[in-house]
Picture 1 (tube, rainbow, N blue to C red):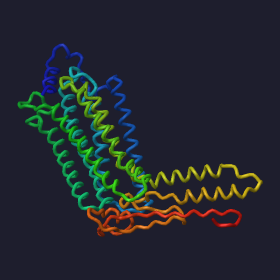
Picture 2 (picture 1 turned 120 degrees about the vertical axis):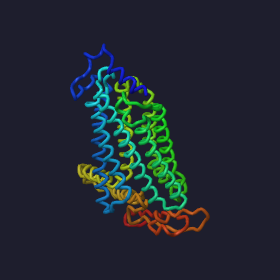
Picture 3 (picture 1 turned 120 degrees about the horizontal axis):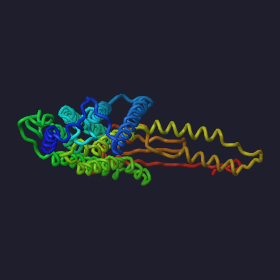
Picture 4 (picture 1 turned 60 degrees about the horizontal axis):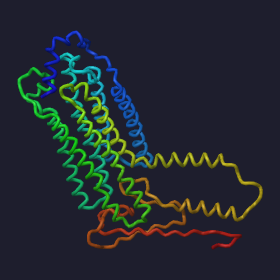
Length: 395
């Protein structure tokens, strides 16, 4: 309610009438944090656009059809672009960055209306991008218990979406009191409402981070591969960090001077949503980066000077052995849905077998390239044989 009391005071204060902005477009506030917001928004708009293009290209080179998670991801991107545009409207039409006593009634109305739209689009963007990640995890780990927990988190995320939108629109009754401080009605505790939204958001982020870790822990694979998978699925820590910083930035809001103190929240809200979208795409971009690294390595090998005219059979044998060792490295394949394993040379053999046991993992069947309908814990056995030749003899 303090925001709207301050708006009335700004309208009726006779000492500030000469200082009020009269133009429709409010000049940009000469503040460092305002320029930081503009830079932050610009950087994440560019990064999200690039990552989205790389995601589409990655699926194209793997010839994968669009799935549910792709549709949800694109809805999130569109919502992200929408609420960034609304943030700039709040900046230039609502006077965000200036003190309330410099804004007239029309500026305050546009500022408040912009933030209602921002809150709804922010909730839609965050919700759909997390749904996208959850649907991807559900496709990777086709285990009944895992799917049940995933659906529960999807439901919690849907509840958070409804909660965020309703708090934004119904915290003041009637709804027009959100942008008209002179209207009859009351407003609830806005600080408590926005803080509750952020706290629930962080809790859901933590649940999503913990969700795949038990499945990865049970994988029958080398410790090195397991550590790599833990690192991939733990990338959500970045999103949690930005969500936590945004939560702390809410303490900087003074609703008696909302337009002046809201800038840090605008910056961290943009960063949080942008990072979530980048994280959702990063796990799918391996084919793109693989191709890039292979080209770089190929160029560097072409530029490397050739050997001297002196023939050394042992040097040649060592080079052949190193090449074989590089070819025999086994890593996760291009398909994030099945975590398919692929070989890197003719000497590497991968065998997969099912072992019936209590508490089995259907995902291991999918990981080995089989049907996820089979029950049983999959054991992946990697056999490697390195052949080295010395002076025509095989060892």
